[in-house]
Length: 81
Image 1 (cartoon, rainbow, N blue to C red):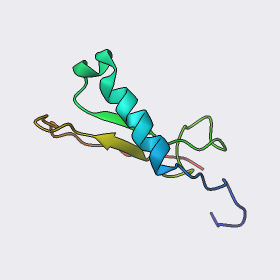
Image 2 (cartoon, one colour):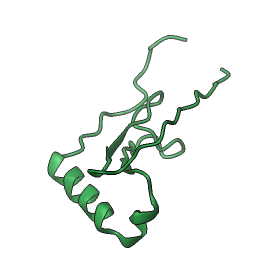
Image 3 (cartoon, rainbow, N blue to C red):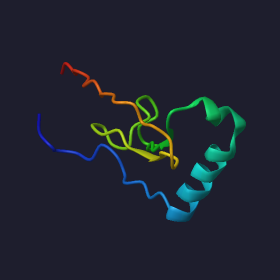
């Protein structure tokens, strides 16, 4: 595989918008059941995967003071070309 063509346009996530959206999530009563609060940063060019690039997931999140983030891991996904 070679990088012979662009796959996506970069997406800008303004800091003010990120902070506002995360604050809204934090004040949502249903968020009390979550062990972490985060926004999945997706790229409009990649609607099927909802990822920030064709190979990268990105989240902007908050672990509130006093909260515990239990250990966890992220599984890799295999792509067959």
